[in-house]
Image (cartoon, rainbow, N blue to C red; front, top):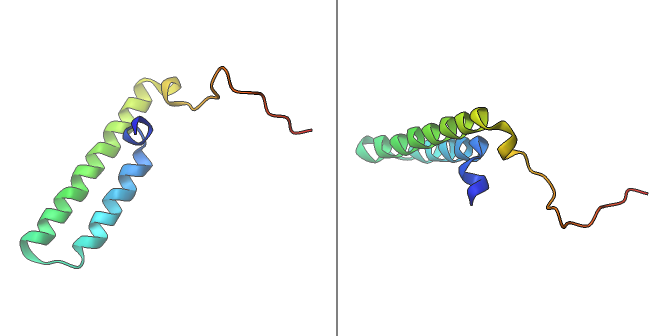
Length: 72
């Protein structure tokens, strides 16, 4: 879950899904869904800022005890 919290692409996909669902509504429900989409966009921007502040922290690396792979 921590990886998703720090993945701006994940939050942007969620924002796009919320916008798509909002198209099926009108009035207050539509505004609510668009508000959800805006919140997901904010989460995406925060995830981007975290990555900018600590870029090496979010790089996925093999676990230290992982067996090496061979492409031979």
